[in-house]
Image 1 (spheres, rainbow, N blue to C red):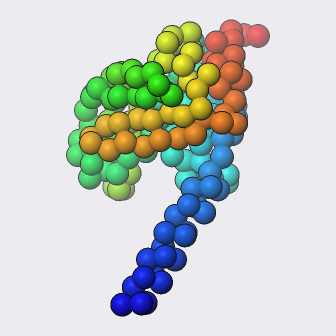
Image 2: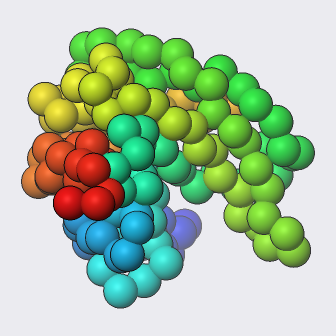
Image 3: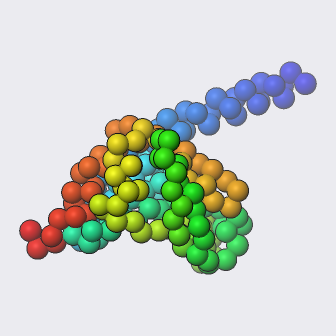
Length: 154
Protein backbone atom coordinates (compact mmCIF):
# COMPACT_ATOMS: atom_id res chain seq x y z
CA UNK A 1 0.00 0.00 0.00
CA UNK A 2 2.82 2.36 0.88
CA UNK A 3 4.46 1.80 -2.53
CA UNK A 4 1.22 2.87 -4.24
CA UNK A 5 1.28 6.20 -2.36
CA UNK A 6 4.96 6.71 -3.23
CA UNK A 7 4.32 5.95 -6.90
CA UNK A 8 1.33 8.31 -6.92
CA UNK A 9 3.38 11.06 -5.27
CA UNK A 10 6.13 10.64 -7.89
CA UNK A 11 3.59 10.77 -10.71
CA UNK A 12 1.98 13.97 -9.41
CA UNK A 13 5.37 15.59 -8.86
CA UNK A 14 6.32 14.96 -12.50
CA UNK A 15 3.20 16.58 -14.01
CA UNK A 16 3.74 20.12 -12.64
CA UNK A 17 7.43 20.04 -13.55
CA UNK A 18 6.52 19.22 -17.15
CA UNK A 19 3.89 21.97 -17.26
CA UNK A 20 6.39 24.48 -15.89
CA UNK A 21 8.71 23.81 -18.82
CA UNK A 22 6.19 25.29 -21.23
CA UNK A 23 6.75 28.91 -22.15
CA UNK A 24 5.52 31.44 -24.68
CA UNK A 25 7.54 32.12 -27.80
CA UNK A 26 6.86 34.42 -30.74
CA UNK A 27 8.33 33.42 -34.07
CA UNK A 28 7.86 34.41 -37.69
CA UNK A 29 8.85 32.40 -40.72
CA UNK A 30 8.38 33.83 -44.16
CA UNK A 31 4.69 34.66 -44.45
CA UNK A 32 3.44 33.35 -41.08
CA UNK A 33 3.82 34.30 -37.43
CA UNK A 34 3.28 32.07 -34.39
CA UNK A 35 2.82 32.73 -30.69
CA UNK A 36 3.02 29.29 -29.10
CA UNK A 37 2.85 28.00 -25.54
CA UNK A 38 5.01 24.91 -25.40
CA UNK A 39 8.29 23.30 -24.53
CA UNK A 40 11.06 24.85 -26.67
CA UNK A 41 12.56 22.64 -29.39
CA UNK A 42 9.82 20.00 -29.09
CA UNK A 43 6.41 19.26 -30.59
CA UNK A 44 4.85 19.81 -27.14
CA UNK A 45 2.62 22.80 -27.86
CA UNK A 46 -0.62 23.17 -25.95
CA UNK A 47 -1.99 26.37 -27.41
CA UNK A 48 -0.91 28.65 -30.20
CA UNK A 49 -2.06 31.74 -31.99
CA UNK A 50 -0.88 32.08 -35.59
CA UNK A 51 -1.52 34.18 -38.65
CA UNK A 52 -0.53 34.92 -42.19
CA UNK A 53 1.45 38.14 -41.81
CA UNK A 54 -0.67 41.15 -42.74
CA UNK A 55 -3.92 39.13 -42.94
CA UNK A 56 -5.73 40.91 -40.10
CA UNK A 57 -6.81 37.49 -38.77
CA UNK A 58 -5.41 35.29 -35.99
CA UNK A 59 -6.15 31.59 -35.73
CA UNK A 60 -6.45 30.04 -32.29
CA UNK A 61 -5.11 26.46 -32.33
CA UNK A 62 -5.25 23.80 -29.62
CA UNK A 63 -4.37 20.12 -29.78
CA UNK A 64 -6.98 17.60 -28.69
CA UNK A 65 -7.13 13.83 -28.31
CA UNK A 66 -8.48 12.33 -31.54
CA UNK A 67 -10.86 10.06 -29.59
CA UNK A 68 -12.53 13.12 -28.06
CA UNK A 69 -13.14 14.77 -31.42
CA UNK A 70 -14.27 11.70 -33.32
CA UNK A 71 -14.58 13.33 -36.76
CA UNK A 72 -13.99 16.62 -38.54
CA UNK A 73 -16.69 19.08 -37.56
CA UNK A 74 -17.39 22.75 -36.89
CA UNK A 75 -18.39 23.34 -33.27
CA UNK A 76 -19.06 26.23 -30.90
CA UNK A 77 -16.23 26.57 -28.38
CA UNK A 78 -16.30 28.60 -25.16
CA UNK A 79 -13.34 30.87 -24.48
CA UNK A 80 -12.85 32.40 -21.06
CA UNK A 81 -10.34 35.22 -21.05
CA UNK A 82 -9.89 36.39 -17.47
CA UNK A 83 -13.51 37.25 -16.54
CA UNK A 84 -14.84 37.65 -20.10
CA UNK A 85 -16.53 34.80 -21.98
CA UNK A 86 -16.85 34.34 -25.73
CA UNK A 87 -18.25 31.60 -27.94
CA UNK A 88 -16.65 31.15 -31.35
CA UNK A 89 -16.93 28.52 -34.08
CA UNK A 90 -13.86 26.35 -34.40
CA UNK A 91 -13.01 23.52 -36.75
CA UNK A 92 -12.36 20.23 -34.97
CA UNK A 93 -10.08 18.02 -37.06
CA UNK A 94 -8.44 14.65 -36.65
CA UNK A 95 -4.94 13.83 -37.90
CA UNK A 96 -4.49 11.06 -40.41
CA UNK A 97 -3.07 7.92 -38.85
CA UNK A 98 -2.32 9.48 -35.48
CA UNK A 99 -3.94 10.01 -32.12
CA UNK A 100 -3.84 13.75 -32.53
CA UNK A 101 -6.67 16.08 -33.20
CA UNK A 102 -7.04 19.84 -33.08
CA UNK A 103 -9.36 22.77 -32.74
CA UNK A 104 -8.74 25.84 -34.87
CA UNK A 105 -10.71 29.01 -35.37
CA UNK A 106 -9.98 32.44 -36.82
CA UNK A 107 -10.72 35.73 -35.10
CA UNK A 108 -10.04 39.32 -36.10
CA UNK A 109 -6.82 41.00 -34.97
CA UNK A 110 -8.90 44.02 -33.92
CA UNK A 111 -11.87 42.05 -32.59
CA UNK A 112 -13.06 41.67 -29.02
CA UNK A 113 -11.45 38.24 -28.49
CA UNK A 114 -7.89 39.33 -29.28
CA UNK A 115 -8.34 42.65 -27.47
CA UNK A 116 -9.29 40.66 -24.37
CA UNK A 117 -6.34 38.27 -24.87
CA UNK A 118 -3.90 41.18 -25.13
CA UNK A 119 -4.84 42.40 -21.62
CA UNK A 120 -5.52 39.07 -19.89
CA UNK A 121 -3.51 36.89 -17.54
CA UNK A 122 -5.32 33.62 -18.31
CA UNK A 123 -6.96 31.98 -21.33
CA UNK A 124 -9.30 28.98 -21.05
CA UNK A 125 -10.90 26.96 -23.82
CA UNK A 126 -13.80 24.55 -23.30
CA UNK A 127 -14.94 22.00 -25.87
CA UNK A 128 -16.20 18.41 -25.83
CA UNK A 129 -16.75 18.68 -22.06
CA UNK A 130 -13.06 19.39 -21.47
CA UNK A 131 -11.55 22.67 -20.30
CA UNK A 132 -7.90 23.69 -20.50
CA UNK A 133 -6.38 26.87 -19.06
CA UNK A 134 -3.19 28.61 -20.12
CA UNK A 135 -1.32 31.47 -18.47
CA UNK A 136 -0.84 34.53 -20.67
CA UNK A 137 1.91 36.11 -18.57
CA UNK A 138 5.01 36.60 -20.74
CA UNK A 139 2.99 36.04 -23.94
CA UNK A 140 3.93 38.69 -26.51
CA UNK A 141 0.35 39.05 -27.75
CA UNK A 142 0.86 42.67 -28.83
CA UNK A 143 3.88 41.64 -30.94
CA UNK A 144 1.81 38.96 -32.68
CA UNK A 145 -1.10 41.34 -33.28
CA UNK A 146 1.19 43.98 -34.79
CA UNK A 147 2.73 41.36 -37.08
CA UNK A 148 -0.65 39.95 -38.13
CA UNK A 149 -2.03 43.41 -38.87
CA UNK A 150 1.00 44.71 -40.80
CA UNK A 151 0.89 45.03 -44.53
CA UNK A 152 2.87 42.07 -45.89
CA UNK A 153 4.55 44.38 -48.40
CA UNK A 154 6.20 46.46 -45.62
